[in-house]
Image (cartoon, rainbow, N blue to C red):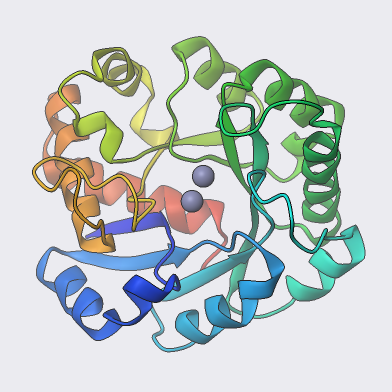
Length: 255
Ligand SMILES: [Zn+2]
Ligand SMILES: [Zn+2]
């Protein structure tokens, strides 16, 4: 069985189809999914969805791309993270692709998330885009190693993956790894050990081949898993079993 370690099924377009999405997960052998919070205002929706089924989990955090949104404090994040469905802090991190200019606030927000994660003992879900050096530097400065976490929707180099793994982080691959032209990323996926690897959809975005360009959903994580298996020359079962084991270990979930 596969697990979708990162999706946004509380977004209205997916939330409206939830029973169908859960049925598709079942059909494709996807046993669990983690729906990831991107701003505090949507947390009630995140928790409402996660509470509908025992195989759904949630996180709390504010995405680096959200400028005009309630800024979280360490105390707020810790308080909200006490909910039994919340297994992680995030998604948080740095994104110099979508936003430019003075991004001090983004780095400060990232630090707040790491401090909150350390204080409540929950792992981090980290988003990094065109900001790998600063992301790793802040992870080190703030001692993110103490809680670990996942570099989600990984698109960076092997060097960045190795540095993150040294800090105890997992590397999560999305549908991007199934795209024909993503040969550099496919090479990274070949080299990340299965013991450090997670798979995700980041749905509704980034549907894998053969659904590229359409609305993504958790069931499609099976295509990501199959691609990882093909790249590594191992069985689908092996990828499913190990990545699922990694998920439960990282997020401290007792099955
Ligand atoms: Zn992200
Ligand atoms: Zn996301």
